[in-house]
Image 1 (cartoon, rainbow, N blue to C red):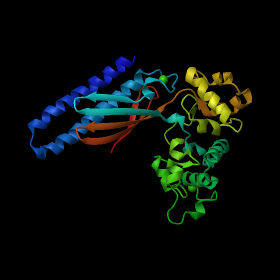
Image 2: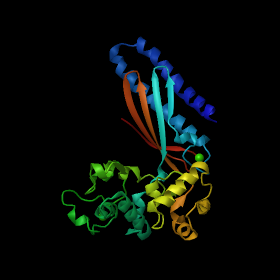
Image 3: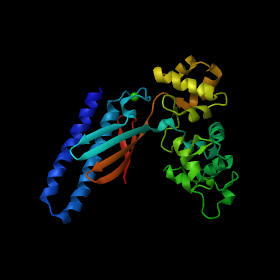
Amino acid sequence: MILIVVLVLITSLGAVVLNMSQDRYLFESYVQNKIETEEIFLVSKSASEAVIRLLDLDDKTVDYIGEFWSQNIPVNVGEGKITIEIADQERYLNPNFLIKNDKPDQKRVAIFERLFEILGINQQILYNIIDWIDKNKFSNGGEEDYDLYTAKNSDLDTLEELRLIKGIDEKIFNGSVVNGVFRPGLRSVISPYSNGKVNINTASKWVIMALDRDIDETLANAIISYRQTKPFKKVDDLINVDGMNSDILYRIKPFIDIKSENFIANIQILLGDRKYKLVILLNRKGKTKEIWKKLY
Ligand SMILES: [Ca+2]
Ligand SMILES: [Ca+2]
């Protein structure tokens, strides 16, 4: 399986990169820039095709850490070096689901309240996020303070947009070290791209703990060590974990799954001495589709 995927990657990327090195000698320097633009365009296109093929080859009925897509994939061809890193988005909590039919969804708000408590983030910031997303202009304690700018009053389209919300600073967004221990920021636990169901095979300890008041750190760690040897094939398999009970399972069932639907591929591209970062959002409902692609 791994060999097949590597071959798929090399054949789709290889032809492009090899042809490019010959072109360099054939054109004058003023043409160079145009070629380089086309090179990166072709490499981006090939990388995107390779990721789509890789995700289509994967078993879609279950997704867990340790599957081929979840590992860093380095591809070296000619003078091109490409590293592909894919993360499913269902490992995160999606703040856009905090609002349902124009009102805060209380069960999901409770999940986020626990998340913020675990991460040591002021709860007021959660209400600022709700104000940012909900359509009304009434305050949940935050909106009245939006004096320098107005709240968006609709869903978050990107993760970076969080930085525009009152109170979310560098530390809260990226995480920080508290008493020698890394405390994750919002970017490590939330995503506006997930389908709203947390994949218990890929979610971090903090996200799992936020799901229910009775999931403490010990139980979250037990879930993670269980799935390392035996990924969950169905949600009900959670009952086999030491410390799990049917009450917790009943409460969290509407919010969890054992597979993922949305993926972000972070691709580092080195072409000679030029460096690029390509980010692709993909959706895999049925066949894998590219939603957007950004080149930096
Ligand atoms: Ca899979
Ligand atoms: Ca609002």
